Structures are given as structure tokens and as C-alpha cells.
Length: 155
Image (cartoon, rainbow, N blue to C red; front, side):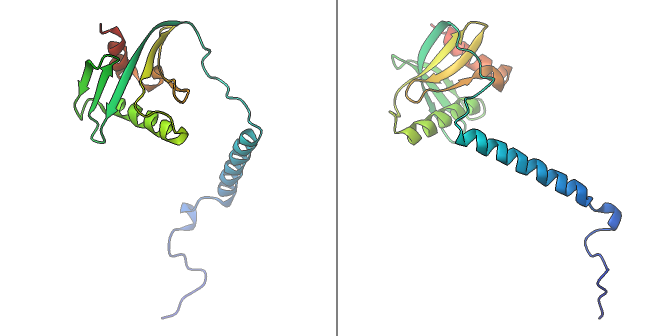
């Protein structure tokens, strides 16, 4: 059995990605990596973050999520505001995991409530006073936004 050095095993010449394209993508990736590194090393402040506006309404809530997606939300008195099944509570359980991860990183109180806040401009957000972490909920879709809006509206 003889092999020729110019035989292609994997792909035909017209099916290969041109070398110039591979080099262009590598240059783009290295440029992005350099920009992120520079921004990180110089402590460049975040841009395009929403301005702090007046808080119209807020409520302290306790989140409890499970890996199955089930979640429970309690108010400051321990009253159950919502009890989500595994197929309905995935977003709430996900927020709970993020809050817990941020608190674990900073050694914060894991049992403290988070604040559900409605601000000017109809902006709803979750804020963790233990870590200063927050998330604007409008970025996660209308269904997820409504889930938390209902929690704020309950007596």
C-alpha cells in the first residue's frame, strides 16, 4: 500500500476554509482578548448600564430554588408568595442560584432577603443588598418579567 503526499483524506480543496479567513478570525479573537485584558487591568468602569432612578416600590423576598427548577418565594413574614413546580420555576430557581453563587464568593449571609424593585420607567429589578449584585429583569423576556411583577403586586 503506497501513499501519496498530496492526497487529501479529510476534505476536497474547494471545501476548505480559506487560510485568509482563518487568520482574520484569529486576529479578531486576539483583538477582543487584548481589549478585555486592557479594560480589566485598568479597572475601566462599566458602560451602558441603566441609570439609578427613583424606586417606586420594593419588596423584600426570600428565594428558594432547587436543581429541578422548582422554586418557592416567601415574603419577609414567611408567607408563601409563590410555589413554582419544576416546569414553571426555572427562572426563579436560576436567579436564586446566581444570588447564592455571588454570596458564596463574598462570604455574605446566605439567608438574607433580596429586594424586588420597581423603578421609574417601569423597570423591575432584583437587588441583593448583601453583595450589591443586581439584574434588570426586562432583559430576560416578558414571561419572566411578569413572574416577578406578580410577586411585587401581591398584598
